[in-house]
Image (cartoon, rainbow, N blue to C red; front, side, top):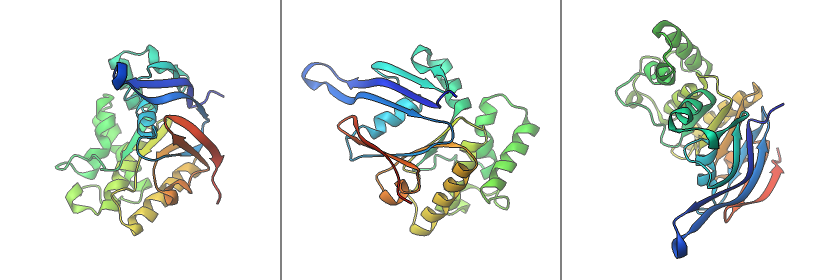
Length: 229
């Protein structure tokens, strides 16, 4: 079966000459369908750059990256946008919800970009919100929701396109301990349904929920082990 993520000797270099920074230095890694992987590392380790490459938000300087069998390096900007919309569900630390839009409208957004008809996208958005336990909050705006509820809306928005990969960047970074536990439980449940998840985090508590922990140092993978449960 084709891996969801297939990185082959990927490097990412910023700047030139003496100011050159090698943010990724020959990263090779595969993530199979259904894997739950945490990427850990200190500031400057390369984990954020790796997330940008994996999320098709940036492209490698050298090496290859295949996302669900598609060579991302061969795509132009328009094609990259389509791949991000259809194959990746993003969850961000800051939620990235539209303040004046309801939970339902926020979840509908990626389906709107896809050109889906209103009735179908509304039904799918409602189902996604129900799946994260927010069926009674569909008409609430972000300022009417707790931080944990806002992140659940973000998870629903990420799932509504049925992506190959769920990519979460510090998903509990702005949450209190109770909301953190709720969101991690939700990600565990999504993983149990067979969804492929990659979480970028510096928190060991978050990483322990993953089945596999990849640690980065100076742009390289320093360890890649199964998490203890």
